[in-house]
Amino acid sequence: MSSPLPKLLVLAAAAFIYVTAETLPVGLLPEISGDLGVGESAVGLLLTFYAYGVAVMTMPLIRFVREWPRRRLVVITVAALALSQLLSAVSVGYPMLVISRMLCAATHGVFWAVVAPVAASLALPGKQGKAIATVYAGTSLALVAGNPLTAALGQWFGWRTAATILGVVAAAIAVALYFVLPALPVTRAASETKKTPRVLDGTLAVLCAVTFLAVLGHFAAYTYFSVIVDRAIGSAGTTLTLMLMLYGLFGVIGIWVIGRTYDRWPRYSTIAALGAVTAAVAVLWCTVIGAPGSLAVFAVGAIALWGLAFTTLPVCIQSAVVRAAPADADKASAIYVVAFQLAIATGALVGGVVIDLSGIVAVTAAATVLVAAAMIVVVLARTTFPRSYAQEPVGAATR
Image 1 (cartoon, rainbow, N blue to C red):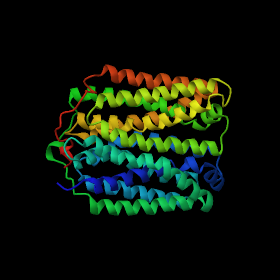
Image 2 (cartoon, rainbow, N blue to C red):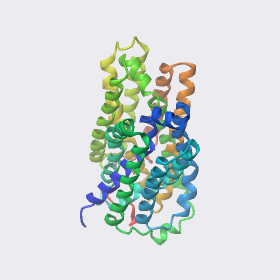
Image 3 (cartoon, rainbow, N blue to C red):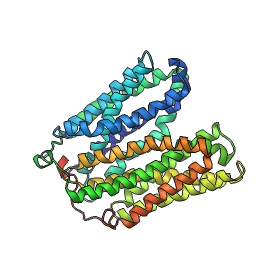
Image 4 (cartoon, rainbow, N blue to C red):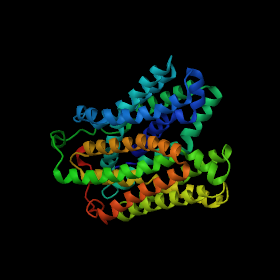
């Protein structure tokens, strides 16, 4: 069997461009607002619309495409992303921009539902977690390089130029995927699966509960990352940029670490990741209570730990999803994606409500409690998160 690394790297590039495109408005909020003549809050809602759009459209679409060969599906989703970005670049008003991003949102859920099972099916036996981690490295690199680069391009040449470049790069990646990936037809057994087994329903419920609690807590706080940095370190501006880069850089390290530990110790890896996120947010909670900048050193360390740990969670949970449903990994992954996106959108909204009512101290406290609750669920769910996996091939349904 030839090395799957080239195929996984192209999939990682697709993940990179998807995350970069999804979060484009974050770094170019003033530019988009001024160009389209809408308030900055309206531009911020693009992320909320996107997340809820993914949640609503993923399951119907994954049922529609369940019998498509996976190479065709991955190529089409990335090509749709390219089209979405190019349409965004020529949007004549806010409604057209929303519609353009909804095209991307529709394919986003399908892409993330199949990319982990595809990566697992390409992996060598016993290396599924490492393969998924390789693909998810693209998401961490998007935080380190993709988002700052598109923000810089948008500030220098306009946000439409940045969107155009993303569209062109996505189109090139779609072509590369077509030539690099094998056909990956769906087996008859997988295509005829109509109902998820009851045991799997229970396992997915636990996995989705952990996902929702952890991601809800994370995004309740991460949405107001700039406020945390300002209160905990005592300054924003350049410091905020540096802290975002620190978070992303340690996220890359976290992906490297989890790729080498998860397949051997899935349970302990997941508990360690959630425990580290809980500890990091708890430290930040303490730093925002005191005088601004009084515990800056601890805040910097907590931000690094936060980035290191949270970026590993999608690998841990997505790998567990694929392991739990080898005959219908796409459907199980789609349910997981819906839970993840609902948590993103809800976390941002909950964080906004809490910060308006009680301030950033209450937000970080709530985030700590939510992530700790997710860790407790993992500790109790010994069957869902076993100490080790048998070394059997996973993802046969997508071969």
